[in-house]
Length: 296
Length: 296
Image (cartoon, rainbow over all chains, first blue to last red; front, side, top):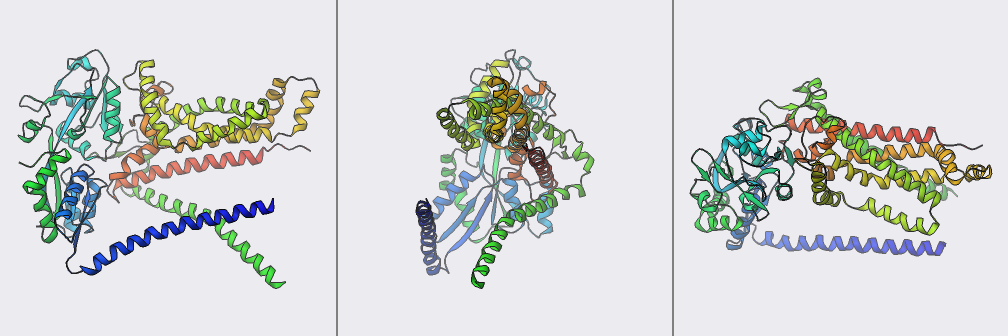
């Protein structure tokens, strides 16, 4: 018994040793890989960091990768976290570019001013928001007014907007999402969301619920549209428009929003190079590859 | 001689400091949680928080009412207990009193596996299978309801309840059982009138701990309960969407500006949650100690 225990003890110590030495290896590999690069080119390597909106993240990430591939010794670190997180980091002077899917709020401007930061906005791409329902739902278009009434709680049955006699299950994103704010400003005109609206943590969860629930209505980024959902034409006052790329690029689709980079004052150095790259013909090509729309 | 005593002392004090580390960590978590939670009440009245009926954290005039979230957590947890206690206690009785040893040996590992399944997997199962089922069965607008969350949490609390109840039942002295059988009681009479009352304190502790498990669960409830911050009716509210305290924190922590009222409100909710689970654990512990069955 005792000897058995001893064997186990030795075995587990050996195993732990193996694991730890493994960790050590990876750590030192990284160190060796990174150290000479910075050591050799310490004069030339420039680096900036971009942080913010998860909506902008795929574009910013892709642009940064392509940029670093074409220009040597340029290091751009891109992280997500949300528009609010990025803007807060810009105000604290931790990063060079804040990515945002909404305008800065007044309180944020005041904070920035207090810390001597002058945020400057650059539109880098457009994102379309499509209103989606289940494939079985016969409704195919809604005006902004109808949408507003559905989302603020005045309408609760599909009959009221020309559909079947079914209750409406209203779905929204959580309040930390930039899309939540955008929809509230544009469609709800500042009204509160109805308190019984379902709140989903991710766009994926919205897609999942709507594809299974014939009563549901929700909003998602155009890049997430697929065959399991039905996108509605919406009327923002100038007739019904379907969210296809033609309508979004021409500016006729009313639920399109700009995506921003915020910088502290006029960008210079690598920050300027990177923003110029994003706005160049090549950069805007990349924007479309990711599923968003170029700046007109 | 001196060396041996010295060595013993060193080992003893090392082990002491390692085990008191838990207490220190708990204490630190407490301090940080309460410090940030209490900061809310500099700008927001405590009564509006504790008695508030609306949770509108990002409105112009923000409202941080605890009640919808608290009752959301309570209704989901209560539902979970209603499902899991009869199932759990019945399984525990079967495993420890009736099952042939081989069957018990077969069942136990499966119950442990149930405890090891990640909560996101439960959530995914609930979303894809249970949510459409509940919607169709009850003819609801959406299947993301408190009941759905209760079912899932009930399943997740089962392993805790079964294993602790089983411990309690098997620790009832054999002499009691033998005495009862010798007096001519049937097997079921013995279980029902002798063993269960004797194990009652352990079973109550198991129920309390199962409750603690259910009230603290986040991912699963966030995925299946719809996250609607409305005070639920009881028991009709079981078929409405609800939002729990845990889901609120998980949903909104991502993009809340650090140091804002909303940020502190989430910490305040976290403090409430901490106090509740702490109390549940204390009560479970004292029940277990105070009413431990003694045979003289």
